[in-house]
Image (cartoon, rainbow, N blue to C red; front, side, top):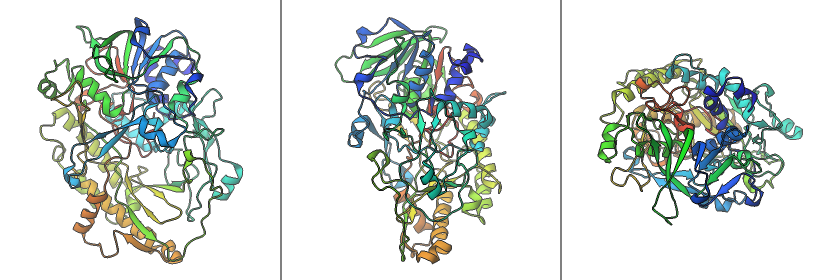
Length: 588
């Protein structure tokens, strides 16, 4: 058992593991012949029981299983919906993900968004964009305000586990010198036994000259180059399967694939005793049940974790009764508080005088695309220096329930009220370190799509009450339901115009606007432009089983235990109460 678990004792073992599990979208894929832990393909070959059963073999689930089996004291089973997949070939990405349609978005011209979910061993870490971007210090510190008394979920409390979980590989000296790439090793780990990596590509795209912070992962954002989750030796995708499964020789670690968990089993005292699952290929409708001697751990992600809780009788009582499911725990926060990083419409420009921009190495492997440029994380004052106080005031003055779904439970309203106070404060603070705008600064063509890092709209994920056992969950982003998100997005568009047209760059390279076009200036026209190009999905879904106080609509406590139950925890992105300003593959 590693020292950081042994020192705190078993009671907090799972909680400590959460700090390292999310940073596992890492390590290269090996052929299945290299697997040493046991891949079980038939339920009849499983043990009769396990100490821990983990539902979901994705980003978090495999990391957690790795840590729990390290000491050889515990038997662990991971139940995974998908199969093992070859991630070295980018053309196979469609075979390792599923696209679940949202409900039509009324504020987006009734468009439907397909939610991409990783359906393979490694989960969404096997299909993501591999960008490694940590949240700011402030992003994590504000979680404490929503948690239970004495919470240690702060930047200071989490940083040691960030460092333990990832092996940082600095850039090549020539690359670093040519592109002014700097980093702070005090905030990165370089443990030899950590098989998960953050590294820089073999080449970068040249970019425009901007002031760069020393390390955008050290708690303060700005403009910086970011590493990728790529194995520095093989240059293949680095993700949770190869970091926490491939090559492990542990007879106490099993995984069964092609299996869908449809229920958590409980005794009369609401103690989780095991799981029930069926094969995904339809070969049998007869369910398999397995016992967990110690705990069941849900790690199915922000989309499917609430669905499994609902099917198990945990969630809003009214929803469960409508689906004819016996209510075990009335927990209205399950499936509420759904958030993602929305991507705004494409704002594009063209150079009149083309800058000389050549990558150091234009023959990068497919895993690294065509290289990358800079990324900017900016607070609201930087984006709109004159109007940010007015945006903050309008948002702060809203009734907390005004833009939430009808009949939202009072606990969920209370939780949103607390979040609203936090976000309004960060918006209004001229010295806030909370970034609201994420903008990838392209090299070859100016412009881009702004990303809102802290949305104010809240969506829902719930079971299909007509076909609860077989249908995918009902997903409603409720995109732009809160008008503040439109205010912020219009501010981003205004900022991009100023940045590319009015500053030194615009004059030097004679930049002109292409989209939405110089003639599109009216507020209503810009809103319509935004609605037409706005995507509510940034591939970072969180919040549907939030770690908040129960009276605020929370689902788990600081130990990640599900309220109203025993021996059931949740370890995935659904527990994040608020989005961070970064990619969610780098989270505690």
